[in-house]
Image: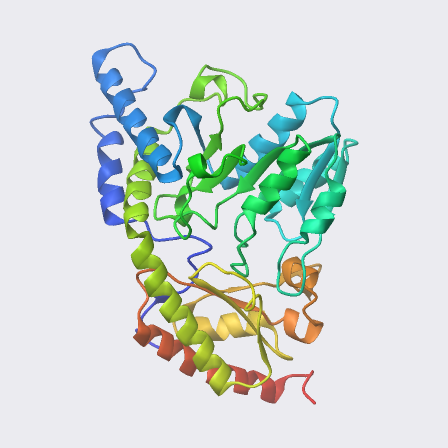
Length: 388
């Protein structure tokens, strides 16, 4: 496989930084390197550019710029929302989330459970959809916060945030939405979604750099500061602002918002074609979450009786970058907790492979990937200890 072309199909893990985003950032590493909190005029100019970026992020999310708090990543935003809320409501000791959340939410809740908080993990059905009746039964006057993702990072399944929000608000709880995998794939407008109290996005999922994100905090939402120190971000998050990355995030938000219709049309065609070709060429496969409402760029495919890591490594040999839903723990391969929660049988769950596309991908790449998968799966099944 010498001089093989790189085919990147792991955009749910991270995205390429757009050239225009990088160009917008560069001056703030060199001639405009000033601290935006300083009093001299050149620093004031930097502060204005930072606030312009805040306006761009607010426009992307359909909210007011004062409702945007810059953070370092999606994980920090999730932690800030959950921990800040429980500190703001000391008489409430109940948190609700789902079994298919990102570790940034799941592990945060587990750490709070060790401190005495009561955690409810909601189930999903075989298609990855949340059980709204279970949510209705679980939320109560002691529930401080419900933290639920907008779209699942592994399967692309979209949760019904409007219905979830109505249930949460009827109980007087706070709703935090992890929109890291929804941003740039679904239209987000907080003015039209008043039931959302807080929402997290991460820059590197939308062609901005790693190390920057934003937490939307609706005006009037009670939230204690969890990172104390200076006065930055209206006292909500201490620390000198990362101006180059903030500027990059603002630029990326403006670009991605304008591209959204094109993105969904393009990636849905490619995703559907990949699923069609794989289904036609390879037997005993399972497209996880296929019957649910999904974001346009994501497909999660399981191949019966082979290991996902083997598929991933052999795809890498063809120059194709994807991800596996399995994780290596104590020397054994464990299926994805998301797929386990969906009830995917073991012989399928431990072979899941996620393909997540972008505007950079082409139909030629889809056909090449389908060809590669056909060869790889045949080869692995020939040597599989699980084969019949």
